[in-house]
Amino acid sequence: DVVMTQSPLSLPVTLGQSASISCRSSQSLVYSGGNSYLNWFHQRPGQSPRRLIYKASNRDSGVPDRFSGSGSGTDFTLKISRVEAEDVGVYYCMQGTHWPPFTFGQGTKLEIK
Amino acid sequence: EVQLVESGGVVVQPGGSLRLSCAASGFTFDDYVIHWVRQAPGKGLEWVSLISWDGSSTYYADSVKGRFTISRDNNKNSLYLLQMNSLRVEDTALYYCASGRYSHGFDYWGQGTLVTVSS
Image 1: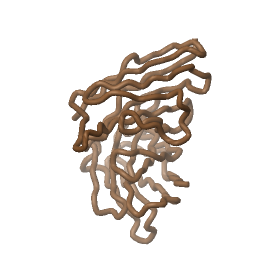
Image 2 (image 1 turned 30 degrees about the horizontal axis):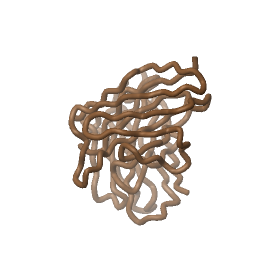
Image 3 (image 1 turned 120 degrees about the vertical axis):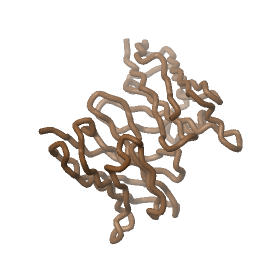
Image 4 (image 1 turned 135 degrees about the vertical axis):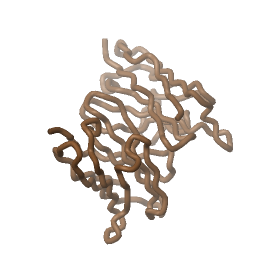
């Protein structure tokens, strides 16, 4: 199984500052055609997860452009510029290249300082 | 708009059985997949199972293989079931139904249904 490792696991951020979350996979996630099937999700307290980014760098409809995804192969990053109060919660990466099983990272908890 | 509504979560004793349902609606494309993803209290997300829109393909996590069965209701084409047998304490979790056009998508999520396995 592909192991997804996120860092940091806890991320205190000042409002208006930027934040960055790393996600590394134990195998390359590049599939035929060059796509890496790497999703980023955000889960606010008491809510269901919501997908933010798909195929490593494509932002979902309605997701603010403050969120950006990058990376390929085994190293991926989610960057949030100008953090707002609504961005608190847990962020998960997930790989969809080598399945089953689909595997998630441990989660990174973003909180406001 | 795609909607996923889960139901069926209750408190059950270890070794017991339970059936969860996921009612899917609003798809604008003919083919999609349905996933079950679970989240134990205070923990992260764990993929459980996948079924193709027509029920022809199914996949399971090793942790549930042989105990859980995913299927499509033959009488209600957009109702997807997760039959859970030989339940263990460690199966206690909020079970989400998720979907998308592609297996790797997970575009849409329901609100979840809580399964508690306890004596």
